[in-house]
Image 1 (tube, rainbow, N blue to C red):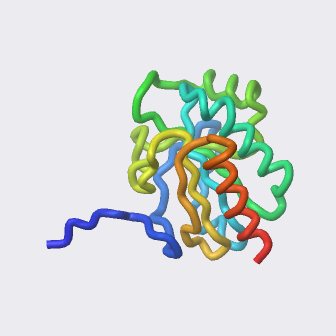
Image 2 (image 1 turned 90 degrees about the vertical axis):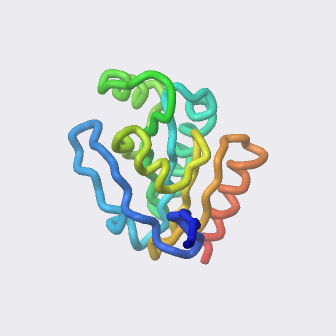
Length: 157
């Protein structure tokens, strides 16, 4: 019996996400993002690294490379308080969130499916819809630096 339960693998398509709309916008299908790379940010409003480094980094990617890469946020809650529409509206303004974001269905369905290590966690998908990179964290000299390198590789190939 094979006990291998990994659902994601480098250079393979991701399983479809399970997201809930926050702002009454339609949840896009993962395949809608084929054609250019996609950066997925798993975040939580109670996470200091998310608010202090990950959200600003994702915003920077949108501002600097928005026409060449898609960015989407997934708010996951594996611990901590529940958040409501008012919290998301306030966060969108306070952190100048420049990319669409959705709630993870049942708080962690996609988080678990994509084997996230916590928040913030980054998933980078290539233009064909295959997993290119997955990394946890927001340290500028580690996770964000490595993410920059991977994004630049995808954008320059």
